[in-house]
Length: 472
Image 1 (spheres, rainbow, N blue to C red):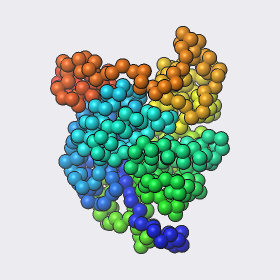
Image 2 (cartoon, rainbow, N blue to C red):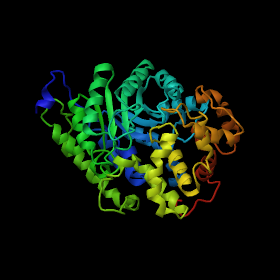
Image 3 (tube, rainbow, N blue to C red):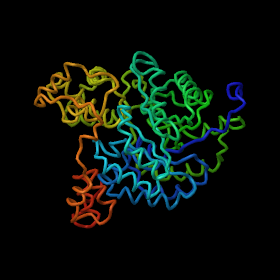
Image 4 (cartoon, rainbow, N blue to C red):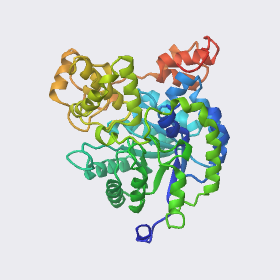
């Protein structure tokens, strides 16, 4: 017990629940329907979580594209049941909930609407940790009086924290930048479950020494280290941790809340949550589980992915990668692609592997293996090299830059904030969706996803024949 009591100022740990967003995104391809959230939402509101993450990430895309549900309606519905606990969302900075940089006017309109409809905590990150891509989001979050959680994507270039790039100084500097931007808390987002226990201790300890803001740690169970990582982070005085209810925890998801509650019971860090109430909610979730069994990975016995410690590929990225290889009838080349991904990542500036950059790198690694190095390149890859996603953590290889410039008419990379090069988009979206959109939320859906958003609005207003199933 000494590790929990060596500081007199220790306080109860706070816990955020991610079941209704990242939990089902990690395990069930983001396919959980709103109707299955309603029976548990009000009961979860009584638990005493610091916040509940219920929106953002891939939910917006998946809902309108595959489930034929309006993402805005989900937020309104959950807000009707969760009246005490702050609602949190994951937002990709200038990418919002999509996969490209959006103009500032769309970003402002989106954030304002999310604030109006009930989001209290915005976990804002950029896939390159280029904090210029947070500026417009942050301005509107703060203007609306909401909680800006500045987020740093956790990444490594070796097995452990350190080296020339992702070292303690890197994270301290990012933390200071976020603090100066007006952040109310700092989240370290370990999307692939790469953080080892002692690295977590060292990182949290130095951030607590150098930063005045609460430190929030997010990790996934993918590698099997997450619970140990959380315990060492607690010893280092972390303020908030992300968990999920047991049915939606572990595997590629977050650690389960139940064992953590029991572990800390009776210590100065006891979060004070009622275990029996949490277990009852878990029983309700179990009743919905059979509906989503088809999305749960059953191709191997282990619930852990030890390979992630080598290739560092997040679980969602692996799923997309396998799907891409299957479509190209090249699944037998999977191991070659795994070996190519770290090489491609290094050549592209060693960015964190998180959406949308992870998909760009994975797709390029596939093309490199199947067709030769950079003989085929996506438009998104070229945009990344030319600076339209922001500044990469490390310089991009000169050979890659030369090849991209050669196929892009000699275009030079931009060095400014990417959104400064974009034309406003809301008025255009308003005009183009005029025959479909009936609300400001509809216009935003179209602005974010013109093609799939248009199809969704046709379905929503019975202007297109609904398919037998909402799944594609």
